[in-house]
Amino acid sequence: MDNYGLKEVYNSAQAKVDIVFLHGLRGDVLGTWTKDGVVWPKELLPKDVPESRIFLFGFDSRIVHRDQSSVTNTEIHSDANDLCAKLVARRSSSATADRPIILVGHSLGGLVAAQAFVHGEQKAATSDAKSIAKNLRGLVFLGTPFKGSPSARPAEAARKILKLFGVSTQDQTLKLLGVDSERLDELTRAFPELLNKRRMSRKSENKIEAFFFYETLKTHSIQIVDPDSAQIPGCGDCAPIRASHIDICRFSKDTEEGYSVIVAAIRKAMLPPNIEPEGSGSTVINVLGKAVNVVAQNQYIHGDQHVTL
Image 1 (cartoon, rainbow, N blue to C red):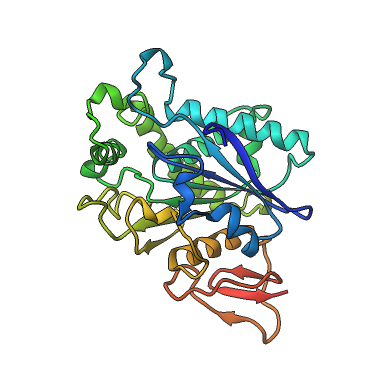
Image 2: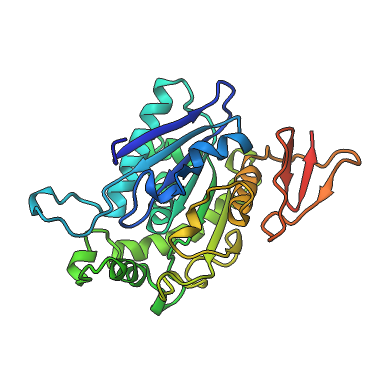
């Protein structure tokens, strides 16, 4: 499979949502989501979210190239625009332009997802980004380094990741990703405001859910993304996953704790607006808790409840 572009790994004839996965710095369109040979968005997720179409999005997340002529513009703005353009093209060609979308981003891939949302909220109604943003119903962030404190800036997380690979972390090199730029500061200021505007809207068509997951284990003795950097208080649900930065996005079994809570988050984002619990079959659960139960195919998650429909 080519490393770049939009890769479809599952498509149900009854699909009601498009779920798109974005890898992070030095990530891989398949490897980021693979554990013990299992690509979980392709092999596990369709069983729990069968009425879906699932994509993996690959982009050039390298920092150092042997051949400088091969260096591409990998700033998150360009990656976000590329994601929107490719997703719009695919949805238009399959007559699914108005289908709900959920973006799942690992590490700096989450910043690309956030940038795509901000672009859409700020651009003209006819733009590709606007088409994606208006249909966006869920954002799931896995170890994404938002600016929680001066010591936990996205640039600092990038340097820690590169250190694991023995890569020099010169400031100029990191600017290829935009992680040291003023434009990223604009993103971290604009994203919470625009996100909460949509979250608090009374219009059902503006409904959107955001989930922030953070790692609790170090990666080779390094805490890549601190908990306070991986969440934006007041902008959605947040919860820990007992894993390192590398493993927070990798699962080989559907019984793994991290997998269960991510599936629960996706299902909550899929919930139709204003749905209410029905009958005695409703059971209270903690959607983002450690003992979360993933609902069956004929059920939806509603707040801290799952509802049999």
